[in-house]
Length: 395
Image (cartoon, rainbow, N blue to C red; front, side):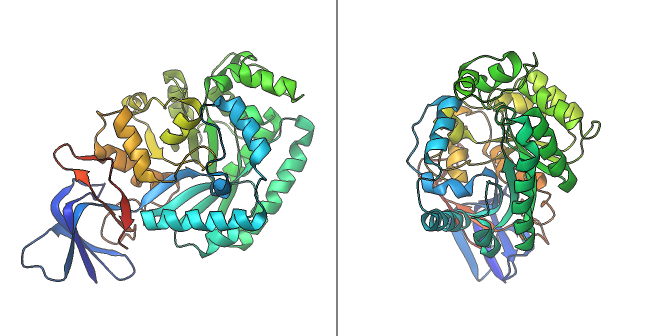
């Protein structure tokens, strides 16, 4: 048994405990939480706050070799050009070494689970051996309708490798602008069969222009490359996604649907999602959104609409660091009215619910084994993280 104490414990599903402690079994199972008494021996006290392990609700760990190689502020069209140019810019052994390095770092920083995008099987052996839980989304692309069946066949081969490795995985569509409508529906059907979809949604105004109006920089980029584009819908891009899902089965959808980025998502899209998707999570990746688009998702609107919000890092092709704490700092800077406790919910229990892991992860409660994480250098008067705050796994 171990007992950890700090200036505050944030159980997440209950109020913060000043001068709180948490007792855990050696395997990390929570035994008890409470207020620290002076006579309690064998207690490790830390200056800072103790929180449950983080849930990184969106990452592309296999792109870790691309750290520092991308131009910032390129917009979506420019970002896609860079991905096409640089994705294979390092040999396989280097790519795998970088995956392992970043996976280890995430664990040490306190990430207990991750929703990770894969386009190949390079990360699978590393995930199988890693202490943090991963749910892998095997992402598919393909703008030409006639290629859809072959794309799905290739994804199913990768999925079988994941299954053999004992990794929870499902096929998922990438986004409306990288897929023919036919492939989007086929990939969505495969994801719905396993109960999980992770979908890049309304990440940029370029995406909205292309899907809604058939114009804009992204549309023109595709035309120059001789790629097919979906017929303009006249509606926001998220409506296009819902329409393709309804080709599989009628709404509402009770499966776990993670909508990623949502940088230009407006109220009409949120209301539609609430109506049709009964287990939806809006995942925000603030540093990535600034890196590519120099803007953030409307988090205040999401809060007003009462939707579940979770927090991700995206990849090192669109971020300088994979760090949940740095993402929290970014949100504090741009949305100073949002309380730390709320953001911590996004970084923990909400992500656990999105991955159907809230029975064991996401909050400090008796019987759970979420991981115990210290965040130091906290401004207790304002209850905010500071520039020097960092996270460290205690167990």
